[in-house]
Length: 223
Ligand code: ITT
Ligand code: NA
Image (cartoon, rainbow, N blue to C red):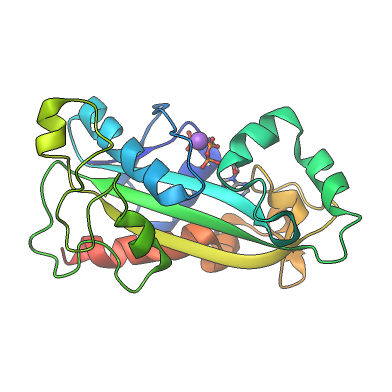
C-alpha cells in the first residue's frame, strides 16, 4: 500500500480522487521541512525521512503559492504564512499590486527504499525539477545518489533514491471567493474561477497537484 504523506486532509482528498480508489492511504506524518527556496529538495528529504518512518513506499507532497510580483513569496513558506498571516492578509498584500499573477506548484517525491533501475529516467529530466533534483540533497539526474545532505555515515554512503514529479498551474490572486478546497484556494483564480469554487475533480483537472499526480500515476503504472 502506498502511503500519501501529509498532515493536510485536503491533499489526501485530491490524491484519492485522482488515483484509483483505495490505492493510497494517508500517513499523517510531519517530516522535518528543511529551509530551501525550492520545493524539490524539501520534498526529497521528506520522502527519505517518511520512508524510514513507514518502512514502505511513500509519496510526499510539498506545495506552495508563488506570487510573481512578490518574487515568489510565500513559496516554500506558504504553510507558515497561512498559519501566521492567513489568506485574507495575503490578499490585502496582493490587492495594491498592479500585477497579481501567481502560480501554485506541487512537488511529489516518491521513495520505496529501492533504486529505479527499471526506469530509464529516474528523475524527470524534461522537467524544471530535474535541475533542482540534481542538487546535493537529491538523487542526480541519472538516479545516482548525491553526496551530502544526509544525516549519518551510512546514509552518506548510500542515500535513498527519490523520484520527483512536479506540477504547476498559473493564475492570479483575487479577493476570496468560494468555500471548497483548502488553504489558499479562495484567493487563487484560474480561468475565471477560484479553486475554492471548483469541486475536487475540476480542480484536479487543472491544478498543480493534479498535474503532478498525472505524471506520477503514469510512471507508477509502468515502472
Ligand atoms: P503537509 O506538509 O503535512 O503536507 P501542509 O498543508 O503544510 O501539509 P504544504 O507545506 O505543502 O503542506 O503546503 C503549503 C501551504 O500551501 C499550506 O498552507 C497549504 O494549505 C497550501 N496549499 C498547498 N496545496 C494547496 C492547494 O492545492 N490549494 C490551496 N492551498 C494549498
Ligand atoms: Na508542509
